Image (cartoon, rainbow, N blue to C red; front, top):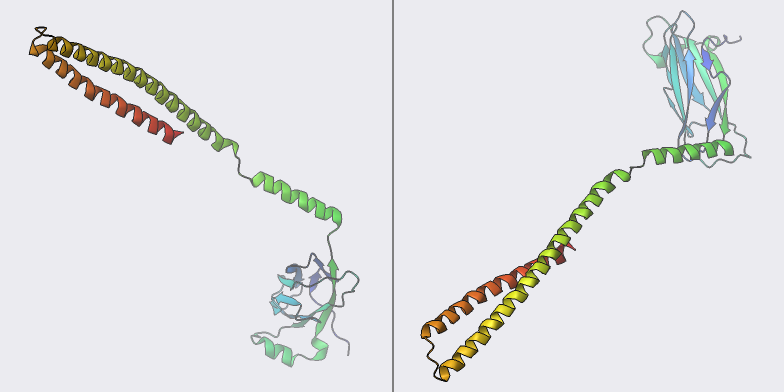
Length: 245
């Protein structure tokens, strides 16, 4: 006895297309629509079960509803000269009222109650033009998503300008301190010369009071700390300039 005509509407109806490259899992969808007024049980079978993962591979479709079946082709070495012999078959049967055990439904189904549709598998590689377009799209997306470098450059430039200003200030301060050092050195040399002159005058019997000698010593002792402060300031400025540069 001939089997019943397939009740489900398949989309696509004849073949399942898989587009490469096939170095990763490639998925295509198969839609099963039930136009009948009864519930329909379905099974999806393949001649190469190790090469495909089908989800869901069986179930029940209520009247007027559609189920999408995902067929996932596993990675493999594609040979364009090799003709694909893989096929799929969608087998269906009307579900008895109140049926809950799918295995029992298929086991009790009579051969004349079964309906099936066959689909062949087609493998396609993208054309060279499509590859070029995909490459251009990828490059454009990479350029669009690339971080902009113009923004952060302005704060860096401002920081560099600020460092240059500080360096100039330190250099001017160092020059000023050097001038002060020269002045203090000259004053110190003058005081030493005056001291020597007074000592010589005292040795020759010039009635120079001891008060003058004390005053000279006081001036010398006062100039010495000032000289040390200036020298310390110069060294501090020099090291600060080194660290900043």
